[in-house]
Image 1 (cartoon, rainbow, N blue to C red):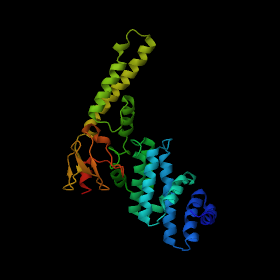
Image 2 (cartoon, rainbow, N blue to C red):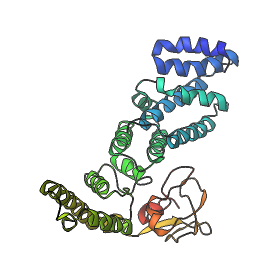
Image 3 (cartoon, helix red, strand yellow):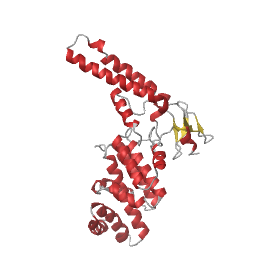
Image 4 (cartoon, one colour):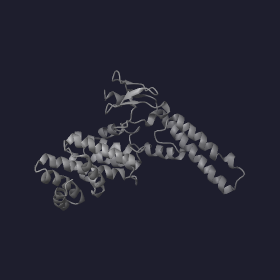
Length: 310
């Protein structure tokens, strides 16, 4: 980016705070150095800048910023750059990402930019979900942040839930989800673990902490292992009770030949419901967490959700 345009635009934008300086830098490049003024382009550049900050802010909700999240953010901004026809070159998009931490309260600032455009509000919610799930199952804090944004952006509760089911197995707005996450943590399994993985983890943990294994140890240690064993048993009971509802096997993938939802088959090729990418499915024991590498949506959706995308 030419230093003169960036300096002028940044100086103007600085009147509106750090996020304004960042957006102003991009605007200055477009308006001063390119010698053309367009209100639509100015608004598009502002949306691009604030979106970069919002995605960065969401990525830091769990206290860390991972390479997977960084890659997802750069991919999303590249897509948005094309969608808005702002045509910023790669090095300017890189500057935008690298400077996004300077944008103050980006999620709040993004809401009024999308609230009057329902399609844009849905798209922004999807961008946030993509970042939230890019490095692992989203944390409760990330889920709450995305759902809060979606509601403030004007989406109904049904729309918020529908959007979440493209990225997580259970709506993050429901109370049992936190209990399930706690149980998964107790067993040491991911949130999307299937019944076989849950049972295997329970066997391993119960053998390790079963009171009979520690009968000859100090009473205090026996008490601690007994407490741990009780936690493991309670976690397994909860996951076993809810597993049939969450992991019923009534999932569908999109057939690459017919385009219709079909039952998943291990190692078969499926098509992403959202972006159309063809992907080889993993074995059934990893089906629950299988995602499209391009748009991060789940490859296998519940039957009712899958029917909505064909």
